[in-house]
Image (cartoon, rainbow over all chains, first blue to last red; front, side, top):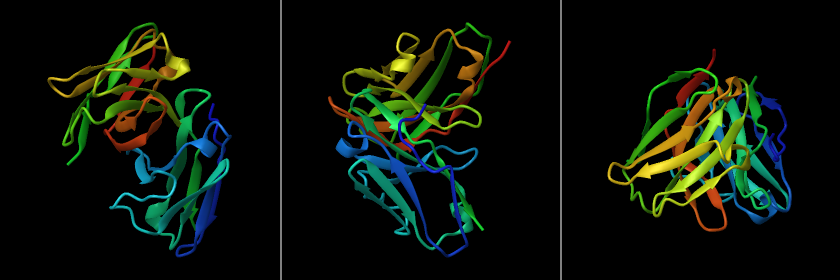
Length: 110
Length: 122
């Protein structure tokens, strides 16, 4: 069972923006960096954001991350059909001494 | 370029053991470790643990402690995940990934393998 809570699904029309929240605790998000992953069927998780707000060089700037207190947010602007996927947040949980993932959010482009 | 190549699919009976391998290349292996993450059908991602590429230190999720062992063959750059006493609910795709951890925490996988389907069925 995940200790990071995400909305099950979000949707928007092509070209619009979506945000995905990730709610944790003081032992997880508040005191550790957050990563965000995109997961499509048949492929491995793809890193979108690391250290809460940094993008790997190959990730377009349509993807952004932020963190405040015990929550983190992933933003996707200029939504494209190729963005349809499941998205997961992840962070270290100091009380569990384990890396934990969020419950996952399915993004649908209408 | 960073690459992690995993072994092929496995089918096991309940109670058996399974070993999945992950060969890493394209980076300094001693700087990073390798983590294992699995995804059961219709479920989310689950971190199983990590092994240091520097000294073989391990961190295991409590759920798997006593049932999983991660080892590394530094001569080949291959990491192994050995899961014992498998059950039908261990059926999942298992992914290895490059991950940096220090003594206090891990920072998330940045490059991953292609995944290995492990099916546990009688």
